[in-house]
Image 1 (spheres, rainbow, N blue to C red):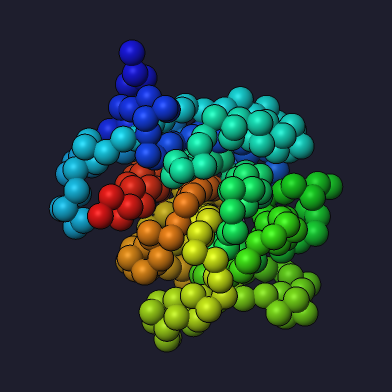
Image 2: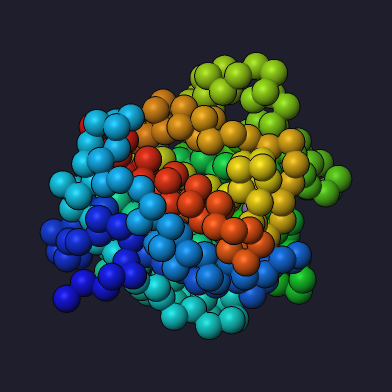
Length: 284
Ligand code: MN
Ligand code: MN
């Protein structure tokens, strides 16, 4: 009855689920290494590595109501993919916690739009890159434009990003000009994530937060198989602390940019674990 290939412990039907996993296998605007369309299935497979019991949060994920809707058909045209995501999200209820598995980071703006429709929303992006380009590779919907498009979503009440260590000179100028909130990897290392989260909390003014995790937020040591690996990155402990501080306010999470062909499974394992941490923190 249930796909064996679904996310581990995702045994519920959509009507009864508290958590909904959705695969978005789209990667055609990738600027360096493509292959994140294979991310959702690699992350699902890797999720079977872990015990259903999470000893850190003292919760058994098999006791929770998790549904895996499978993958959406997104084709290769970014506009078509964007529209398809918008339509497909109607299957997910307002009170269900969404875990979207990418795919490249360009899948995020329609997800943010959808969440913003059901109430005031702040956005936190975890990324090595600013993603503030107006256009890249002849499209405004490239993964290099993700944060720029997020900022255009109407009625957002707050945006911040953490882990930044790459961008064009123009993107950094734009961020300063617009007075955007972003925290570099150096600030996290030198001042600590709790210092950063105190400032982030002032920016994210709504109770509901959308969390977008571009896996290149992590150092390539922890997540080598991503589209654009960037050294001097974050550790998974930083992510855990973010969840501990803000987790209960997060209404949707996406995990993007896992391109499984570029390692021996470590990055998909990490992504699966970080998705499971999100589920676990919500069950407490
Ligand atoms: Mn990104
Ligand atoms: Mn990135």
